Length: 347
Image (cartoon, rainbow, N blue to C red; front, side):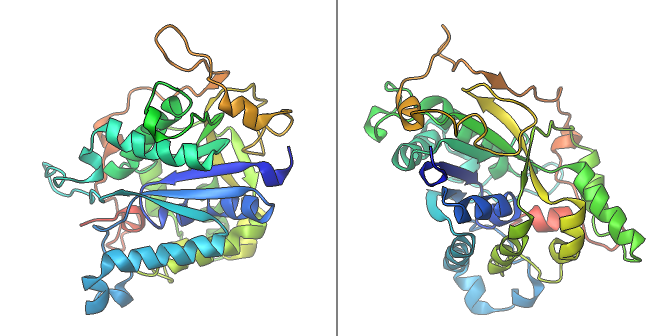
């Protein structure tokens, strides 16, 4: 199959997540002719205005939902991808001890059969060969990120089943699912390179947070350094959410290209045999004679109804509550947790 016939779907929780997680990869594949669809599960309505320069603009505060839709449209155009709103409401990031309940009607409280059906409809319409999403801890344990994982995996299992949501389109079975991964080694390499050059450590807070979380298995590294600028431009398009002077943009581009020219993924599940490690999300698929035909056929299932996989990741052991915590951790003593501030979407 030619590159132009391949289709990739990236499922994210909020607008701006698509630009901070895997954006250079999607820009690379789109530039090569792959059809790429980004799905935003929520509208990010409860996200704080994280860019201090825009916090006091009354029009932005009043119309934040539309502002975020406009920002998403600009980011999608920069990356060269199509985009779908799944239509659910941002859950916000709960704060306090004990944590307050999630707001009524939010994404994090929707029944899975409702949210999965919505995503199955989009999968059957777009017909992706590969999905990307977050791991079972959400990558960052925001309730919407965790729910995005749950919904994506439920839709992956259901999309090819003729008996599941029969009114939601013709069955279509994606063949691979990846988790967006944050490699601690990448952050250490970039951090050390900046310190060697005489700068402050830009990722101290990120490293403190990441070290408290389970180590994931990086199976796949996609070279995409030629698209780092597009990634950053797309992130800046989310102007209410991203401080242009923040840590996202601290490391010079030449340092990033030299130290880590990849984006990292964990292969979660594959219905086709794989050869790990990989450098391509479509590894094992390009050589298939009739890729679309394979995706149209009902996949094999075991007696319990679960998909018979050629490969499945082994998740880390039990995750304690600290690993799921979104408690602020200010490792560099500047009064701000950079990871929480830039991932947070707080109310």
